[in-house]
Each structure stands twice: as C-alpha cells, then as structure tokens.
Image 1: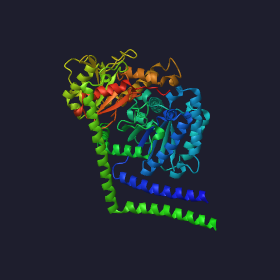
Image 2: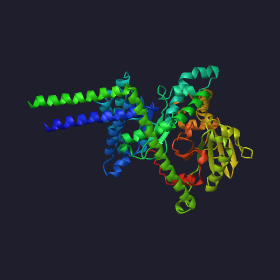
Image 3: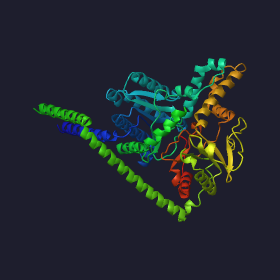
Image 4: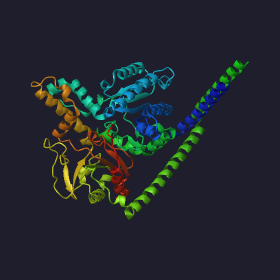
Length: 274
Length: 274
C-alpha cells in the first residue's frame, strides 16, 4: 500500500515536473532553437576518480545523463543529437578498460532497443558513425542491429560516434568519392570537389551542428566533427559529463540564442561563396 | 476495497497527467499567453546579459591585476609547449590592420615565434602589408616533415613567421589533395596493383596537402577574436587537438588577456585519448 502511494506521488511529481519543463521550453522556443546539438561527453573517468568509485560507475552514470539529456533535447524540439562516445584514439587505453567499455556499450545499445526505452518513446532513429570494424564483434553486431531496427523510425535522430575521428571520416569520404568518380577522373581528368566529399561524410543527410558542447572544461575538439562545425557555436561547460544537467543545457541554448544572428550571417556568407 | 482504492488513485494520477498536458497545449495556442512567454524570454535574456556583464567586470579586474605585475606566475611561465599559434579574426574586424599589427607586436613581445592568421573572407590576405616581400608564396612539394617553415604564404614580421589563411585553404585544400592522391594512384596503378587500401590513409593525405601547397602545422593554441567562439572554417585537418580560446571582439583586445590565455595554455594537460 505504501509502495503504491509512493509510486502515485512520484508519478504526479513527474507530471508536474514535465509540465514546468514544457513551460520553460515553450519560453525558450520564443527565440531561435538549434536543430542539431553535438556533445563531447568528457569527464566520466574523472567523475569516478573524484568520487573514489570504479571507472565503470562514472560511465554508467554518464549513460543515465545521456538518456535524460536526450529526453530534454527531444522535448525542446531538437531533431538531431550527436554524441562522441568513443574515439579511435581511445583504443590506446589499457586493454582491460577498453574491453569494459566495449561490454558497457553492448549492454547499453541492447537497453536502448527495449520497448520502454527512450528510443521507443520518441521513435528515435539511431546512427553509429565511425570505423565499426575496429569494434569487438558483439558491439559491432549490436550497433548494426540497432541501426537496422530503427532505420524506419521517423522521429528525432541520435548519432553515436564510436571508433570515430574526424580525419578518419574525411579519408573514408575521399575513398568513397574516388570509388564513385573513378571513371570520370580516368577519362575526363575530373577532380574531386568539396561537394563530392560532403556527400560521403557520415553527416551527409544531417544538418551541420548548431552547437558543439564539450563538458569538463576542456577547450579542444579532439578530432570531432572538424569538417562540419565551421559555424557551430563551440561551447565548453565546466561540469564533468555525469554532472551535466538540465540547467547546463538551458544555459547552452541561451548562449546559442545570443550569438545566433552572427552565426547565421557568417553561414549566409559561406553559402553565397559556395 | 484496498485494490479498488489503489485503482482509483492510479486513474486520478493519470487524469492529472492528461490535464497538465492538455493545459499545456491550450497555453501554446493562446495569444496572450504567448505574449507572456515572450516577455519572460526577454527577461531571461536580460538575466543572461547581466551575468555576462558581471563576467566582463571580473575579466577586466583580472586583466588589471595581471598588467600590474602583482603575480609573478604571469611574468614567468614557459612557452616551450607553444610551437605554433593560430589567431582567428572576424572578417569585419580584420579590416582594422593597425589592430592586427598591434596584436602581432604583443605576441612577438611575449615570445611567440610562429603565427597563423585566419579570417574566413581572406581580407587579411588582400589588405595587410607587412612592409616586406613574402618569403614564400603557395608552392608545392618543397617541404620537410614537421618543419614549421613548411607553410604556404609565409611572411616575416616582428621576428615572427606569419602565415595568412582563409576559408579556401580549408575544405578546398583537402579536396585538391584528395584529387592529387587519386591522380597519383592512376599514374602508378600499372606498377603496383591494389594499392587503394594503403593509399587512403591520413599520412598520405598529409603528404598530398604538402604536394598541392595546402599544408601547415597543427596549431597548439587557437585564439578566436570575434563575437562568438566559432572556428569559421579554419582548415579542419589542422584542428584535431588544438586548444581553442575565445578572446572576445578584436576592438577590445588586451595584452593581459593574451598573457592569461597563454598562461592557461601552459598549464593544460592532454592525454590524446589514452
């Protein structure tokens, strides 16, 4: 009886909280809203170290923060969210750590495909961007399964960068452009253009990010979306990724809205020149 | 009886949730309430502006303290990690060549030896005159690996080497290097079959960029002068691990702000993904 009372109360509180959140998002929507936000989820290991817990705990808390951040983004009407989960450079870590991250990734990908997950709730389409051949077999298969299972979803798009670097992405695009234009290059001495490369990037069907947020206060992009982030607002937030919450996201949107006219003007110049 | 009560409470909770959702949709469609939301949006942005004003005041105080020489740490820090510095300037502000030269003089006084100056529209390339002939214009294939002098469009000013860059040195350079890689493959195809898997590598792209005259070292630090923290199309191949710091508009640049940025950079630690 008590437990049922608690669940009713928490259900009511969730409804009130969702209502207040929707009011806040409606207020924010009065200004320009980003269509695509990219996150560099940095700081999970430091979070675990600061709290003297196992590294895996930091990543698990980080995953919970990811799902709640995704929920807030989709409630605000952000159609595309991209996250930098695992870089090719991260394979340099201790093998035991890499293996535990692979195991965690497989577990969380399977969780995302559950009926009660955020993916089902919002009809999310999932992409995995990166050199998936570098992943362990179970993770690669889980990623392929998730992409196939959600391919026909028409809701928001979640792109997870694993075994990814921007320079690797560019080289893949060069190779694909070469395969596409080989005959033209051989016979007509044609050249590869910027448009040819952009058609073969992972982001071909996705707008460029409006905001790129890196947590933990670091100021570099670490080989993430270097080609696509020309006119994105680069933000570095001080909290570690597991500490990132709604107020940090709201602040990021407000900062974006402040500089939006300038970024639009610069983007307009670029389109005119292109 | 208890089961009946529990079911009643659950229905009540669901009704509350539906009521809140319906209320929220009504709010969205009401013009008066839209006006109120808009008013609150403006108030929110006023609050954001007040926070920025406060940050500006703190920054000015910090600059004053640094320029007074009170703290020895800002006078004696090592620049050994800073091999190459890049500066992005908004193209509108790049027209103020006197300010640019002042900035370069300050950088030289601090001890910076190699600078890349970037503005998207190429205003600096057209308008700035360093009073000397260029040391080297765009030329191909004359570079040694890792040589900071191995750049195109190099000038000398105040005992620093200055590289001038614009938007066309970024993605277009990569496209030209990609075309070079492909045509190089075609020329040597008869000698060495099946080279594609070893052709499209990042190392070969770097060599191709040198060959077509679009190579340059990767800056360790990038200072962004403009209204927003945005890299505005800086050559993506050179931004992988660059620390990016936003310095504000060029018109309000300060020597002590540059000292602070370089000091903060000297304290940075990068693990490059490991």
